Image (tube, rainbow, N blue to C red; front, side, top):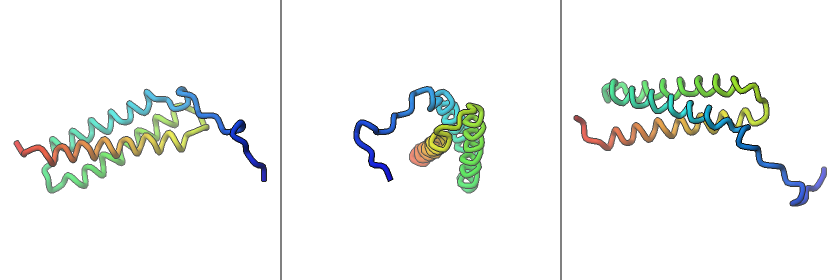
Length: 102
């Protein structure tokens, strides 16, 4: 077992390895699907459709991250992107619940 010193700390990944535009695309897709579900689906069926929205945005994220063809950081990028998509959809639903029905 080797000991690490502060001088041997692992390097942070550069901005290119995160593929920020792909993260933004995945979050935008989640936002569009979330808004469509909120606007078009009645309250009784919204939960099922929001689960569908999260699943669809997860598939989009997976496809976008596979398209990078970069192995390093794949799990981290995918997890961060999916978590962001879930947060985006949750925020849209919470805002919809707080606004009065028109």
